Length: 359
Image (cartoon, rainbow, N blue to C red; front, side):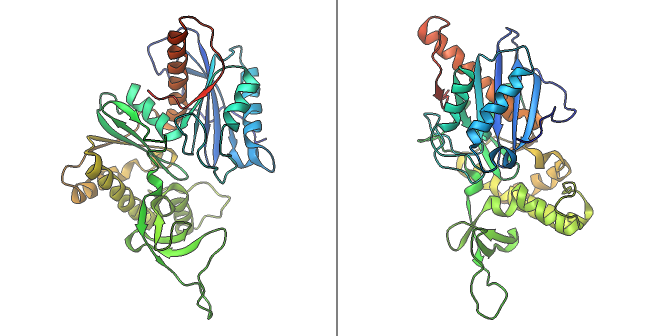
């Protein structure tokens, strides 16, 4: 299991006007990192962070996440009444993972089952970007908006949609997979005389014109936008431009030597915002995630470019809740589930279960 810790010097956040003593375990399963936090009355009182690859290893990722949850709970005096989980995956309306993810997250209900069996309390799951949108809309930068997109830019790109004041999850629960929007991209021939395409587990080599190039697993003739301007792609390009080795600190998009990566970020993110706005008539776009943390100086350029691409550009803000937005959203979702079930049963007795948590 990866090392755990406090996750940095960020202050604890009070996210809602309640202080009823109810504890919630919040879990955020990302492609790169898995974070856990105990919240009491909306305040993070203890946290841990692990590399997802360390948790998965050659073993069962859901079981290791459940073990990490037990470890975190054991470090506090607060027993959680429920568990809220966000994952970088499409989560069905019934709370199951619709498709396995390559970082070790299996399809189905194994993650919810593992946590429920380990902790003996209700478990509710949703997509991590949906949870960020829930938190930003409830008590953050999207408060009061009726048509907002919360775009999370971490290793990949996620999207939580707030439509008519509610988080929109789609017909199956899979709405918001903005990172999988298709961009035309030509297959690029591999070096060598045989003219064959570079292929294999890392995908085809592609050239997407003004959005750059790289490897893609998208259907032929296309790349997914997150493969070009998601955090992993931009970080790799910036690292190459700045001359950092793979094990060095994460490069900044505002480093003058990484100007080409910053240009791609602005162009790709602007295309995404413009397309979403054209379809949904958004009044607000909130950007959040670890890549956005050091990209704030690019916002004015992004706003200008979006205004060039769409007739009625939305307001663009950085999220108010920082990298904890998914954890805070998981807490809110778990609390909403507890309240709903208490109302349904007219009493405090709750059977442990897993749900997608529709609002």
